[in-house]
Image 1 (tube, one colour):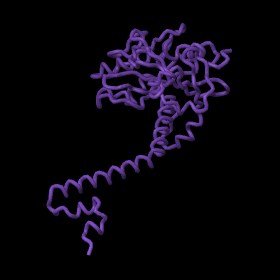
Image 2 (image 1 turned 90 degrees about the vertical axis):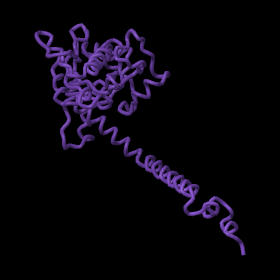
Image 3 (image 1 turned 180 degrees about the vertical axis):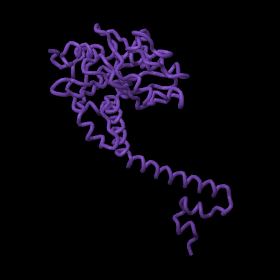
Amino acid sequence: MPGPDARSGGGPIAAFRALPADSPQRAFAIVIAVCIVCSVLVSGAAVMLQPIQKVNELRIKQRQILQSAGLYERGRDVVEQFAAITPRMVNLETGAYLEVSDPLAFDIVRASRDPAVSQPVSAQLDVAKIRRRPARMPVYLVERNGAIETVVLPVHGYGLWSTMYGFLALDGGGRVVKGISFYQHAETPGLGAEIDNPAWQRLWVGKRALAPDGAVLLEVIKGTPRGEQAAWQVDGIAGATITARGVNNLVHYWLGEQGYGPYLARLRAGSGGRPDGS
């Protein structure tokens, strides 16, 4: 009569069965088997859920854009509301629009790391500490009767612990703030993370972003804005000086000549940043 090894082919299963029930080797083998099974299940779940995760990330992004523009209505479908937004892609050097099929799908993080579509920012100019800047960036427009009513600019820069990613909304001339929101960061809960606080974000609404000549006025300060400067200053977050400074720096970078400056100049000139620049 064939032995156990012969019946099982003499493989790993036979070797496992041959181990004493209370042996360390058998316990170790069981642990390894459970780990392998769990890894397969987790990996399979991650693959199957990836499309759902991408859709959720897109909805979060759309909601943040709507919130910064002051258009988000709680309880209404985000996709339906986002129909009021026109995504466009902008050449940062010229400020002109580029014809791109889906600006909303543009991955700022990936583009910033790709030397083929981004460029290094010199230490002297890199106040936002982004290191590399994509050659093109998306903008999101709210238009009415053929005119730009609101433009939402993706912005990012380093705070205390992390790169903060958000949206800054301006009026159609690019001069007055209509809102600000952040969708990704790792700032300190209760301190720097207060950049997510709607009460603090409301302080930005109505602030002057640019002077008539395009110089950046908007700034985050320590303390309550007073006098004439209160028209463009925002009270920083108590106990989060470095995060507030990071927000100030990213605003100055992206509103300046290295960021959306050329595009905003087109808006001020009334061209609306059209590709032909007319």
